[in-house]
Length: 431
Image (cartoon, rainbow, N blue to C red; front, side, top):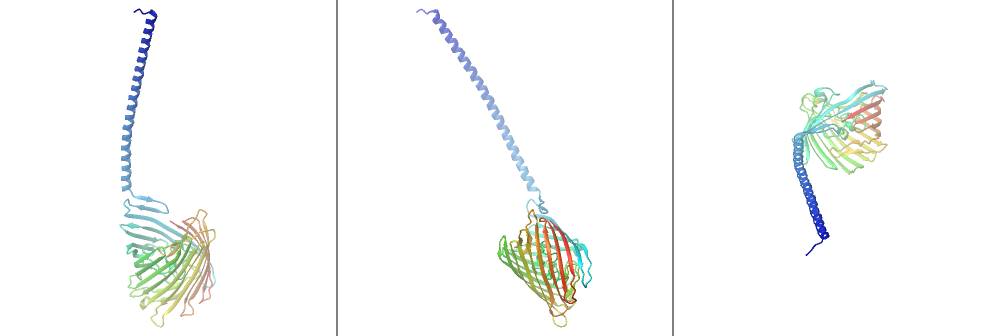
């Protein structure tokens, strides 16, 4: 068989092309394999880095958890508060500064206008292994024991709380209201400002239960304040409250309380007196049971209060009997009615745990409050021991910590006819 030269040339060309194509495919395949190998190496490298980073993250998280478990928690909102990692111990530091200035519209009695620190307190409070504690010193009232206010420990018991130490007996709604939340610069006569003069804080034991609409508390105490001399006088007081209406915007409160103080060996005199023209103004003695007589002072009080939107009212009526060693006992009656209007909105808060009202919640624009009170106290067994006060005021809440107060008091001493007036202002800062 004979092949032409042309056919032979075509066959050689075709074979060469096929060989070149095969060679090219082999080169591309090798390149792809090389790229795949590089990619696999890169993936392996990234996986190794990810595993290493995961180990680092786990270790970092464990370190953070270990630090959190062994470092106390510190909070500075509204004061300074430190809590142990296990939450078994807690301590907070607070305080209050009330700086007052007075000027008098004199009538018959002598009075000196002045300025003073009404209160300058530091408060340490917290928890320790299930017990609450509080220690408060008022440097404006004196040093050491003279300025000691609350100093107690407390713990939960039978659904309530038992308190041991130095604190206020459970009596008088306005007496139990914090001085930071008072409507006026001074409390009414149905409190340590009048009826229980000099007997605001006592040493004793108290028990109180509270719910959303009620409180019930009872106190047994010695007739000795922290700075008083040792004596054997004893007292007891109890208070119950009920709030049939208690919502975010409306509260209606009723309450009742009783107190008995038994003077004994070494007891100081049990005195009721009234500074009817405000603090540092003239004072009227109302009744006295001497400690040496070993007689008693008993008192019974009724309360009613309410906050409905920006409007607030509160009143108490108290009847007290001051025992006398010779002759009949002396009956003392005191009552007051006070109210306020938050003129640019707001609402006074109700503290269900203690059955008293607190300050309103202050917004960025501040709050203005108009206030008024009528207050009277009378010894019904004498003709010359009666006093009344009419107070008008304005409060300006700048923020939750700062408040300015103005009070004008018109006092009336029924015995002498004195009608001294007082202008008073307060700068109040608390944290």
